[in-house]
Length: 287
Image 1 (cartoon, rainbow, N blue to C red):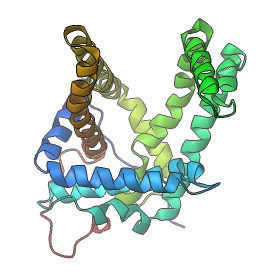
Image 2 (cartoon, one colour):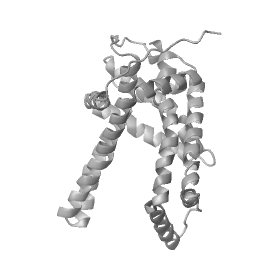
Image 3 (cartoon, rainbow, N blue to C red):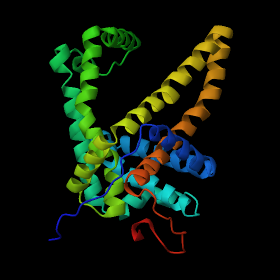
Image 4 (cartoon, helix red, strand yellow):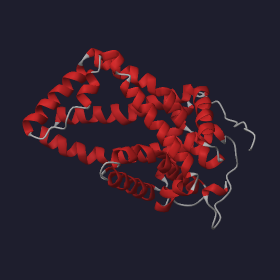
């Protein structure tokens, strides 16, 4: 058995959280159509998996780390002079798949515990609403929607959701860099989770700034833009124009987030390393 090896990481200043998004946007901007096609393929595949009876909804979160490696592979290829390609998306199925599936199990377990923990704060009110039978009629859908809105506006429920976020943080931190550590450094799942957690905790400042930036750019900016349109235009026009403007923004932003996973991983675990140009026949797992 190989002796456990230390994994070196770099601790960055808070401002790096913004730099990760800027650098990711720069990579995406140089190959927009390949990235958007890759992203669309990913969504189609995940929707198809989700439709598989009995196992689809469970399989989707389990294979997320596998596809995360696909986006890492695409960014790795682009940084070395290539272009993101659809086959890159399936790189995780060819690179330590067993460890990546273990990461998926850990992710599902951690988020499940976080969601279940809301019952400690609100007495199970949120869980009861979310697990209620699916409405089948218009009246039932209207009643369910009203119940959901009332639940989400309840102070105890909001406190419960905040508590769930806190409970989920260790899982999210352990998962943040883990797929990259599995595929780039060939670590087993447990070691990847431990080293990811250590690096994420050490870099909590840039990660906090990154999270705040994502909230502003992904939630606040579109929300404010849509609100302004609703104020200055008739509702029907504002809705159509809002969709026309926000849909490209959402896809561009989603692609940038996927690229930022690679940018942040590389900056933390391979800071200052010289990138070797891509050569014919070379794959991500060749280093």
